[in-house]
Structure formats: structure tokens, C-alpha cells
Image 1 (cartoon, rainbow, N blue to C red):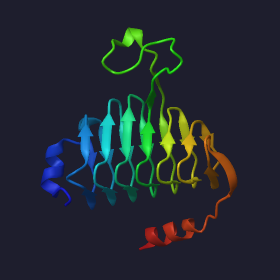
Image 2: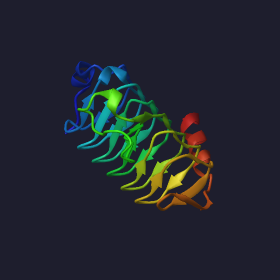
Image 3: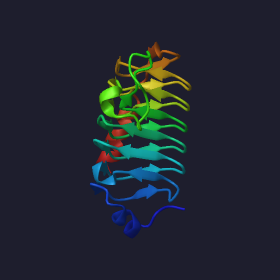
Length: 184
């Protein structure tokens, strides 16, 4: 089941567009920091926790069991697709042992780093991927399943692996369809 338009308004998003389908099993923390465009679908058991800002463009799909979490900005531009069980983090603990970890420890004892995650137009992230802070997927990036993303990724390229490495260039035919959609 999807939330009704009235219930979506009551959640308290910063902004919400038209034709938005959000599962009533999705969870939102700090919805006042979440912007949602037109023609967006968010499936069951997704978690969006916006300590800072989450901005979702138009024609975006976020599949089941996906999470967008952290104190840094997260942006999903138009025509992006996030497959199931993807974890997007704009904050990350220090795992070296130099600092303490977990959100219940006072900040002065932890080494959490924050940074933006920007997913540009026509990008798609496959099932089970993990995206770390300070990551930018330029326009048209395609990422294979179970990949780890950390850094900047070249436009219209296909990546896969841990860490994700470029496999090949990606076709741009979807741009023709985007134009046709705009013309209608």
C-alpha cells in the first residue's frame, strides 16, 4: 500500500511533488529535510534519515530495503534508479580504532566524517551496493550489483566490484527517450 496524498502531506516533507508513490512501510527521520520531486516511487522498508538534506529529483525509483542515511547532503537527480538493498551513507565512522564509534558516544570521542553523495541524472545503482561519503556518480553512471562506491565516477561509464572499477563506457540512448518524454 502507498500513502495517500493527504498522509504524505502530514509526514512533513520539506517539499513533495506530484505522482509520488511511497510505501506506507517506508520510514522517514527528519522529513522536514527531505525534498521529493514529481513521479517518484519509494518502495517497502526503505529508510531515509536526513540529518542534513536529502533531495530527490523527478522520475526517481528507490527500491525496497534501501537506506539513505547521514549528516551530509544526499542528492538523487532526475531519472535515477536505486535498486534493492542499496546503502547510501553521507556519514561514516572511523574504523581504525583511533576514535570511538556509534551514535550513542558523545561526538567529541568519535571520528565520524561527513560528506555529500551526489547521484547525477540517468545513473543506476545495482542491488546490494554501498555508497560512502564524498561520492559523486556523474551523469549516466551504471553500477553493478554488490559494488563499493567511494570517490568520483566518470559519466556514462559502467562500474563494478569492491572497490568499483570502470568496466566500459555506457550507451547514451536513454537521452533520446528523455527528450521524447519532455516533448510530450
